[in-house]
Amino acid sequence: MAAPQSKPLSRQIALITGGGSGIGRVFAEGLLAAGIGKVVIASRREPTLLATADALNRQFGGSRAIPCSFDIRDRQSTEALVEKIHRDLGAVDILVNNAGLAVPESIGNVTEAGWDQVLETNLRGAMWLTQLVLPKMFSANFGDIVNVSSQAGKNGYADVPSYCASKFALLGLAESVRDEIRRRSANIRVFNLCPGLVDVESDPNGPAKSGFLHVRNMMATLLYALSLDRDVDLHDIGMTSRSL
Ligand SMILES: NC(=O)c1ccc[n+]([C@@H]2O[C@H](COP(=O)([O-])OP(=O)(O)OC[C@H]3O[C@@H](n4cnc5c(N)ncnc54)[C@H](OP(=O)(O)O)[C@@H]3O)[C@@H](O)[C@H]2O)c1
Image 1 (spheres, helix red, strand yellow):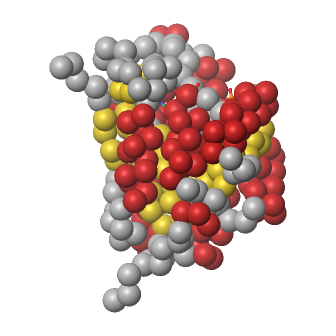
Image 2: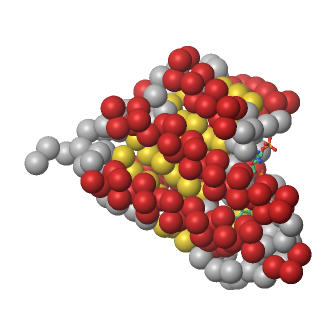
Image 3: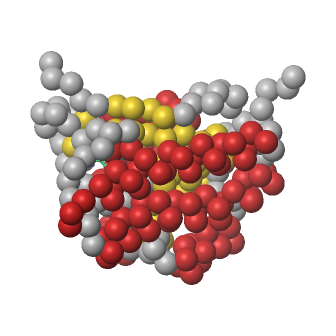
């Protein structure tokens, strides 16, 4: 049987939600350093996106980092983002569902507003984006969908039940999408990153805060997962810090 078709990274387009800050920004940096064609970084805060894209384009030369503001809780805004990418750049090859937040409300105190904010951002938004990019991935018979879940997608924590529910559910969503892909024998991979606490502000070359993963390990893990053969079905990658 022929090996599943691959595509040079230099011709690929990535969409990273929440790519203007934290882990998403470091993912963008890693993909640019690895030679990706274009990386769209998308979230609500336009000034942050512009500053990040500017810094990344100065660091790597050219204009391969593209800032796009949108609100993942708003269906129209999410559709407009994907339409713009399809129109201006082409199909998304790598979707990184990274945008996310927590509202610390223990079970006795969960509010409708807090619950909706977390579930709509972390879960429904990732589902919408997956739904919007998949048709072109199926047509091209190529793509990768990466969900940033958490150790809170594997373990329950009393102070953030809505966050845990959203991150557990992301894994279930990924399983269903993987099954759809399997039924269609499509060359699309879906995997989930499940980190513990990540230090996103640490010195790039120094150690992370005690008990935290250095953010560079998120970048390295993303690049490693993407580098595997197309017929490898990688599921969840759990990562936690240990004291040495
Ligand atoms: N840091 C950790 O310890 C850790 C551990 C495990 C998992 N994670 C997960 O990793 C991901 C990134 O987190 P981070 O630590 O890098 O924090 P962060 O810098 O706060 O990143 C979250 C991103 O989500 C974006 N976002 C939030 N609401 C949005 C909305 N309505 N529409 C579009 N974008 C939205 C934010 O951008 P705007 O504000 O501009 O919209 C921001 O860039 C999250 O999914 C988080 O749950 C983090």
